[in-house]
Length: 246
Image 1 (tube, rainbow, N blue to C red):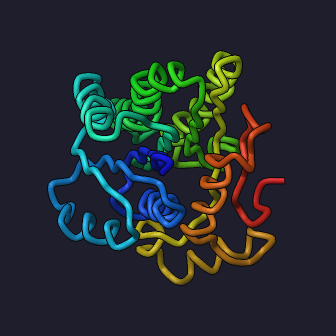
Image 2 (image 1 turned 180 degrees about the horizontal axis):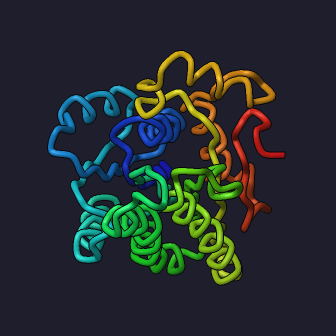
């Protein structure tokens, strides 16, 4: 019997990350989920994934701290012996206008979103190189492409992810490791559910498809990029935004 493939999803305990992890589980992948909050219901998550007939490992780690990332990858390899797909999804926002933005708000967003993507990718890549196979999908954002008032820190981090993705795609292609980014637009998640109806109506008016996307619509593309169906795609940024950026 062929060994199950393994996906690592950072920030995979809720929202888009969880939808991505579930998509891989439904397709027979064993799953590693990294989370950071003490409020995460580990037992409930374990049960939810085991019902899909796959094995799951949940590891608490701050992706901006190299020693915690190394421990995350070490535990993953000890349990499964492989990581076939890496999805760098962990991210935070600390939105405010430039003139009001504190240095720590800039630093923290860059540390988690951009440095975290670098640290996890660096830790996982040697195992992919050894197997001469691997897929890396990094979560950027449409604001990393277009910029957005009040999000200079977040936009910078997500634009950085695009440059990082293209660079590693060039470095790793000869080892049969592919790296791509997805750039979601406005997606219906916990982060957008707090917006007022007026704000949501205004947002939808700017989207050609006149609606927000769903976490599952992001997960479908991330799964495609991690599968053999996309075997000749690397170094790309796919906007999933209902036509917002075109």
